[in-house]
Length: 144
Image 1: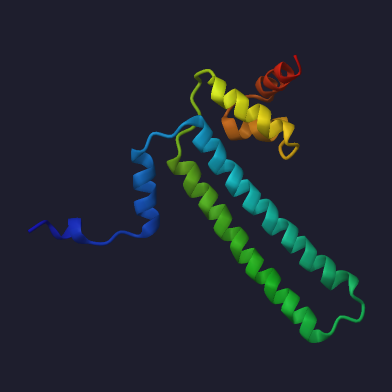
Image 2: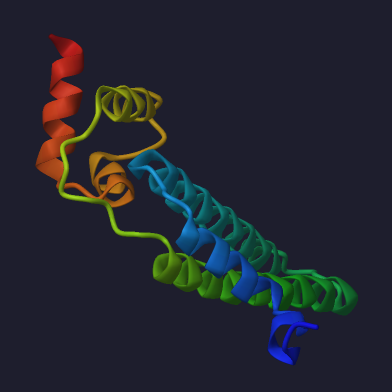
């Protein structure tokens, strides 16, 4: 029979982190994960701003409507705190981008993401673990 420690269930977060550390992640995988977390944070911020805008610009806002908006705002605050925690956990378990050159596949991904207009060069640099001038060089090569 295995020792008791081997059969004790682990918290899901610990299991995910251990599995992630055992995996080999590409720079693209890391960038995709960072993009997903940032997109979630951006969306929760937009929702939060919309709720505050509704509450602030509605002069004849009923007490019940205001309380409902306030409750939604509190729920979004909780979601934002969870996202911040998730981002920290991911940062701890994902390897940092290597100093190796970007692959052709990664360069094409960067070109596509930049040309979509959804991401700035700075954001892509953060996601891929390179400098903004590197991203600039890649996007300039699209034009030639």
